[in-house]
Length: 581
Image (cartoon, rainbow, N blue to C red):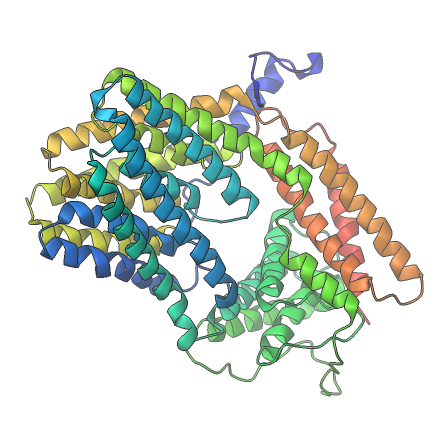
């Protein structure tokens, strides 16, 4: 259980000035409007729009726009697993399709049993169930590292279905339509394997090259310490590239390269060598190497089936190809470790507090909306969940700002569409277009996503149960205000008491693995060298993520920053020694 914050410092040395500084740092909206770099956004957005339109438009044409809503909910499956290789994307999309279908099925069944529109115990039961779904979805998505709006979309599907007014005979048809929409999204999500089977690997490698180029721009190839955040992003991107390719980072021991991916592995190995040591690129060559990496990234993100010949700025003078004998057991274990990285008991414990925050905040917002008698009270619950779909107080504050401004612009867009009094078929087509725009901008910035998500929610409601535009907009405004306020207050009151513990554990683990790496380097060659290297890379990534999470709370971990910087620097120095022949 989380601890509820008493508005007093945990230790005498933390005085009110420290508390004020912590609150100012945690509640700062700085970075809320930063745009993230995304590859393949157009193709992904087209896939999402097709998944929505293929099932929803025919239903509207057939005169059942109310049922098109549930097909649209199922089609939201397409947002999961967008960056995964196709072999793993199949599994992720299969689970997501089942989850979205189950959300609609259980929500519809609960609406029949509880009849929330009658008020009383039935409405409270739906509010409680919505909170439980929110907490479970948040916890599972955090532990499995499902990015994007995964937990919020699952909650959205459940809440829309649970707040409907179906008869008992409507549950099965609505579930079937959700399954049809999810199945269509699944097919479109994996169909790309027929045209560009290595597209996810290309995008992952391209991102790694750009992140390392950013690092070279910061360090200039010098031996001094790099900017920690830039180096962390580069490390995460390179590890993600290895994860997509299914191979561990390179060690002193040559290793086999999967068939058809030799060029991608070579480029990722190059990025790794530049990342893990100052000897990767001379200072004078840092600029040209960075430009070369970005040029190669542009070639990878193109739509060509074949990758042009790779120009390696650090290739050996002999030009001889590197040997690739059969993979040794150590490298196989390292690959398994890299592919199975979302684990750890401490990570599970740390993910519990954000899940509690989301569950309690969602339930509280829904209860307040019910007490106020809002017609669409579940919008308050979803707004609270969207704000709390974060890792700490700082990101919650950023989400609150993004949600507020995005909702304001989205309401103006919704009013413009509703004011045209479009036919249901045309309204469905507008929803498909908005879905395209939503998925195109969602990964770039959440505020932009809310601009299009807000009219989609209103137009889906208009399709299901037509109502005056003024009433819909007023309900949305009140629901958003309640949800955002309750969500932010919940983040402030519930202490993330595992954040500091996670930093301490991550620091101890990083030091322990660094000691193992030093022992492996001083001893005779060992087949476990790849395992030590991957463990060290994952440990330094976890250390930075844990520190960033704790730093975004009101009272961060009380660890000297120089200790963290020293442990991180030692880890990267050892990674450089491990990869050099």
